[in-house]
Image (cartoon, rainbow, N blue to C red; front, side, top):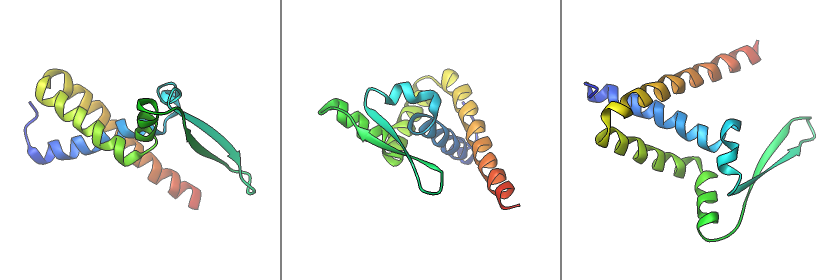
Length: 120
């Protein structure tokens, strides 16, 4: 298992951030959200496009849609999933955590660089 508790906290934080973002926002996982959420694209006056989410169905379908439309809610369940995987299957979870953690750090760096580039 990975050693330092502080390292684990940081790694889990970035991994949970990246997996949550992957499930809630990324286009590549739109097929996961599609049965539960309709994503509506609305052109704005300034030329940009805003995306709104409309929940589908009722009962369990709607509940999952609400979960997937809430970054904070999904983040809690993603973190629980990662923790469970880490404690039950550490040999499988460690590479996954490392992959997601590094991807999370890279996403944050890219966002910062993108903002700095926009300002210049």
